[in-house]
Length: 161
Image (cartoon, rainbow, N blue to C red; front, top):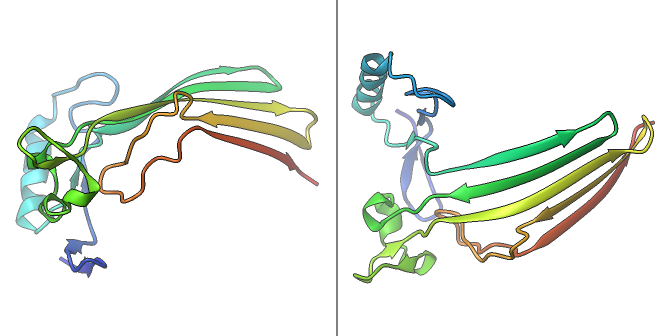
């Protein structure tokens, strides 16, 4: 297994195992669980330490679309990471995280409500607007030293020649 060293000296493998579709996509499907378990066990035997379940984060969209207009109301979210869920390299980075009732660092869950609009004025000219974090929620993505930007408005126009 090839490893890279992060700026803080922590070594991580260059490969991880994504497990998002194991157990089904939008509907549960447990028909291939035995093979999935064998694949995860083999990955661990080979030295994989990053198993990305995607269960703890994601987004959801409600989209309305006509020939010229597209409206997108969406939510971005991140689940809570308790102290024992944090990567060992993150458990000592208590300056990045909130504290639980025992004084241990953890990453609280968060979500943002967002809205985007896209309008095609002509075949060549398109206008875009996105209002992010409408409720102006303060959050910090897991393992990030950066807090949220707060409410954010993005306006753009594009023209194809």
